Length: 368
Image (cartoon, rainbow, N blue to C red; front, side, top):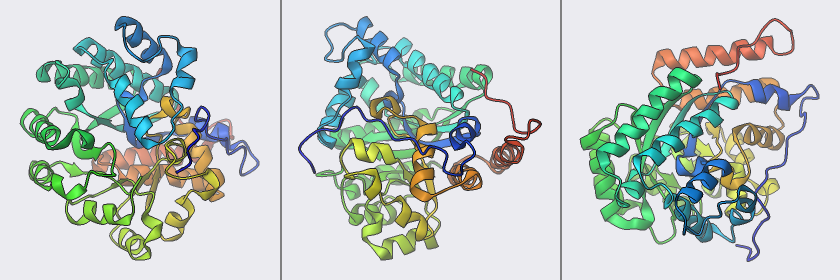
């Protein structure tokens, strides 16, 4: 991993890969997002507001200073910075504000549906009562759908660096409190030194309660971590999976069993797990027949958003508008929406693509 840090993580634009305004097409395209973190989606404005409300934090209260603060030496430094932002979420009002404002940013990008990765342990261990936390995210979820046209669902995520105590607490919060919007159970944080198999009992408990298994794997480690996620944790989707192309047998397995990958190109560059966009393995994943979805991970921290990630993917994969629309439908296919919801959002994408540029087609933007 290089020792020098990248500059503020800003993904290059795809430009107009089909020569007819692909950026404009992406901007209006109805989308779903499957790998995006709750606290990691806090905009500079919201982070600065929280920092001002809670003085004494290492996080700058000046939005302009956050670009430098969000420059990462390596993955471990990213985790350190991320946790310093987590520390700004100190009461239920902070939780509700953050959640609704994340949905507002999604609405501006025409994201219709998102499975937001939430790490409740990080908040409850800082003293936010568990029931107050649940009420805050659920209140924001319902308001986001009613006021912004954005449908949110939750993935409760074990912070792997916090060990088995965090896994026990996350499983309790997911299974015993079971908020209405919860659909899946995940595992994040650093992979190096945090083997996946130790979390099996907690994933077994969550899966028995009807939750889907969506651990991060193969981001900063090799293919074996992905195999462990599949074979031990029962993974139905893989968060990142960046190292999968290193093992042709694994790629074949993912394709054969239709296990989607939640790919986050700019994130992988910002955290230094991939040296450059030109070396990103997304092309190898697609060429192997793996169901690939494109996501933003921790967008403000990486100077990106989902629209930019679609533009990046379009450039790397050589996609035209039809290809980008199909990429958007991949996210719908891989989502945990019910069949009717998937059909509605897929039809909305098709109608938008068919009507784009004609002056009489397409769909209205989500409310913001």
